[in-house]
Image 1 (spheres, helix red, strand yellow):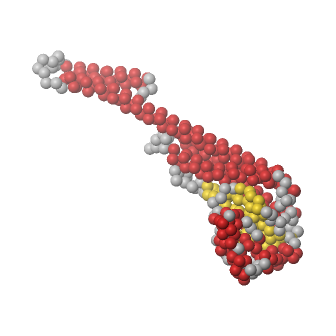
Image 2 (tube, one colour):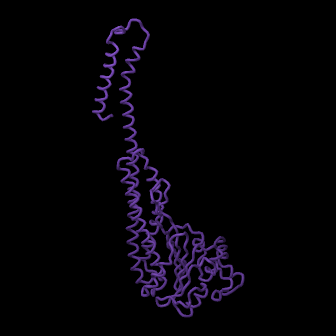
Image 3 (cartoon, helix red, strand yellow):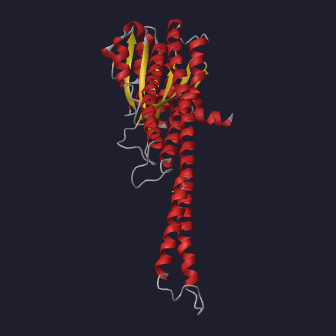
Length: 371
């Protein structure tokens, strides 16, 4: 309890110092005026009120309370000081504030009083000319979303996953945007899952490339089993992908099936579509993991077979070389009375015999597939 109390004090510094009531928050100390605020606007009847754009979050909420609608505030990697004023203005729970500032959270959905806190992992495919054992395939980021009755606060971490295009696209769909903050939450969820689908297709291409390389003849100068590093690296990237997709299944299921006061019933139908797409991506990612396991095992098996083939070839040539070694070893001994030492045709006869035996052994081993 003391930790929560200390955190609450940390995110409400302005109220504590000035004893200012909640609805008359001192905007002169508003940390949200910093560069962390990417966009701030008021929406009424599905349309952005242009005259009320580019304002502070406090001003946006004042206009919402006076004229209705809702405020959408977008932030990028805010610090504790930058987020403290916004947290106090909107009454955000300290635990959710801590998660939003420090990031590195699992995808989840939590409810704090009249606010939904949702965490999404964004996935970006990293283009590469050639897949290597050190290639970065996917890059992750995070989008946190605070959804209230008359506000939406999005907090983005990472260089990818910008919501600017999403905001502009949603502003063109006034009918959907008129549904309120839950429409924004759905749009973000749909945007994130659409990103998963695109990345899944690109990762599938990388897996196909590795699979073809593993089961095709090795290139000149390469050996069987040299693809293990690439396969393992790709498997690690797929695991990162899986960590973003799997935990999000339960939150999407709740948003699509369980009635919530903060989610418009009409919007809940759209969440079902998002949940279906997410389930499909999850099945693909699980399939990627299993397929990479099979490819890795096949690659290691090929390496073992190649090593066995090399050992058989070495053994075969050792058997062939053993014949002249044995004969020459016998005739290399310094004895006076050895057969055929003084015979005129002894030397060519021995060479002919050695060559004949070696050729016979070579033919037999080659017929049996050892050479």
